[in-house]
Image (cartoon, rainbow, N blue to C red; front, side):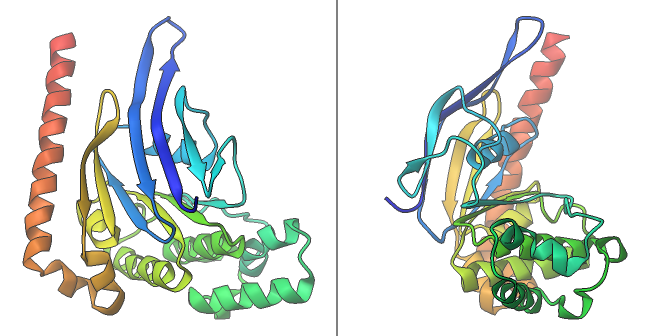
Length: 268
């Protein structure tokens, strides 16, 4: 079976004092190959925990992740991760960073060079391939991270707040690049973000998670990612349904935050 299945996933963290935190509870979701999912929710709802389990960095307490018919039991090349901070190798230049995965696979130099050059063209960094990564801006470093991820040709790209540290203009440009890469590569993408606007723009599907325990509260199927492939993102934001859905989700998350604050005050 192709695609990604998240089946009744639960995660409990046991604490040294004998208590525990239920980070996720019975989370189930089916993603078809090539879908773009954005994940929203208040702090503490388990978004990053979910992503780390899909990546294979954490083993769930209950449930399982199945990718293309195989149960995920740890990290694998078929899943690529893009972090908020680039996590690049500072002792390597741009070209070497992007080619790291193919080098580890023992790919022939000519084939690797062709892949790296193509990806640097795609992300607009061909003129910077010999630069050290510390010489690049934050947005350019994230472009390198995307290219490095794609060089491994993963089936699924996992993105944990990848644009959160960027200024507004750079972030908008990167949002457009993510949509372009999604459409051109056909990769399945799961994007964690705290920005409601970003989740609406980039999520073909969008889930809002609720906390304590983390679970799926609401799911949306949206047209904006498809619209954004061929339109200016600022024009997409003017769509009446965009503003309506944004306000609905903001109110939803605000109510959750209020409930969390109320619980905290009651416990004191």
